[in-house]
Amino acid sequence: MSEKIPLLIDTDPGVDDALALLMAFNDPRHQIVGLTIAAGNVGLRHTVANALKLCEVAGVDVPVFAGCAGPLLHPAPDAGYVHGQDGFGDVGYEPARQQVQAEHAAQAIVRLSHQHAGKLLLVALGPLTNIALALKLDPTLPERVARFVVMGGSVTGHGNITPAAEFNIYFDPEAAHIVFAAFAQIDLADWEGTIAHGLHHDRVVEWLGADSERARFYERISKKTREWSADRRGDYWHSADAYAMAFALAPDGAVETAERPLAIELGHGPARGMTVVDWQRQSGRPDGVRILLKYDQARLDRLIREALAAV
Image 1 (cartoon, rainbow, N blue to C red):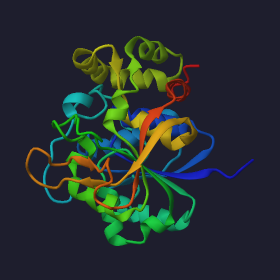
Image 2: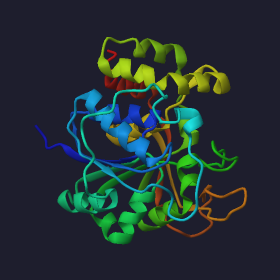
Image 3: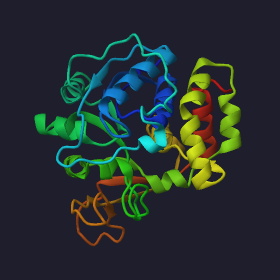
Image 4: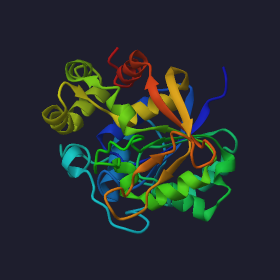
């Protein structure tokens, strides 16, 4: 049996983060070496508690490291109106017994990158604040990361938190600028790709009816955001982090990608947080980002069903 790939996930759970984490927990080819937690979808107190609870529900022993409680420079709105004010649908779950680690998330990222140098798969599902701070602690971090997958951006400027920007990047664009400038190669799963890979509500309800604790828990915590989505986006629900996690865990499911230069807009006007893709390669900068444009929908659906034990 081949050696498992060490997987470090930086996340801000969040209902869609929870689905992505269940996918990662379920993948036998990867060993999750840590969850580093940021504020984003909701405040850090909730995102940490949610990560701990999800580990308990899934029955996995994964260390959880609390990180940054806000963006590097400027305050940003959360997404509690979508995910519930606690990030998990305000269902009032019983807190997990597991405790958070004492080590700060940024320090854990640096340490684990040394421990698994040259092999580490790093996946970022939330704002990039923790990873930016880790880069400031150790600028050689990218040299030790084998592959870096980011959920973020809207590659033709059709945002979901502003007209031009996607939530994760908009929440902390300064952190995103630091991260995208530091890594020579990033695999990007963006919001527009997410919208193109919808999950039909009726099928999701069917999957969530499975006789498994994971499905039952996820049905409870996702109900509010699925109803919110049905009211605003029609027949399909969209899980950005599940889309990104599929690309991370099973990159052979990618049907179409494009490599281009990308920059982050840091101004305070209407374009703040926009991911500006140089589609025509006019800047002369290297193609540092591989953008996922199309993923095998049946493969994505199967990974989600298996994560929920709905097979």
